[in-house]
Image 1 (cartoon, rainbow, N blue to C red):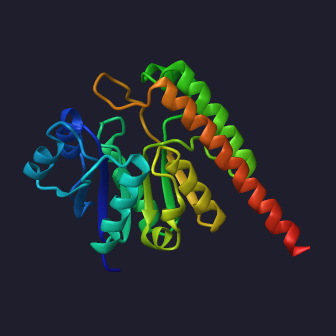
Image 2: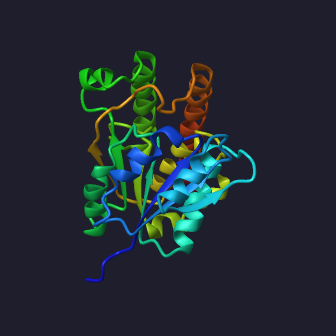
Image 3: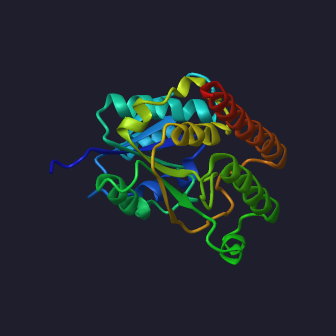
Length: 243
């Protein structure tokens, strides 16, 4: 079987402090290319990324986290990726775990892989996740599972992998340019009937890693609930139209 092309995409914004450490741990025996999209950082993320030999694209203005991912996936597909791994360049997620992500998709067990930071409450909090974020994560994931019929341990991870066909068959332009993009794309994946798998990943919160502030977290939570119930309404309406 011909080797599938694996591209890691890094949606970056002011990632200068953690980029090198993240890139150094990406397993190059599995990954063919690392592509970074910079969302108009005001530090030296772009210069550092180029010095590390990454494929670099830069937004001419700050467009937001969701818009960054849209650009990441657009260029990864154009460059012939068969498997696209999205990894935050803030070193919150262990790049070495890219290998099992690729394995599960390459061997056709799943179409999408998620890295779950929620294995036990003790481990998650010990890894530095603030208590309010842990509680919100659990609450929102419960709602999303109930609405979608899934049983995922975390919907809000920043480490994911997609089979090429998944991203080709989903209309990402409909999604937000903000953080709720992550929720929206998962509902799209589930709505299309794709298989979603997950593996546990360590929790690493530390000074210098990027996080959403409290106000941003509240906005994200409200938008997540709205997305979940919009999905439920569409499914109910579709079911009613079948009768």
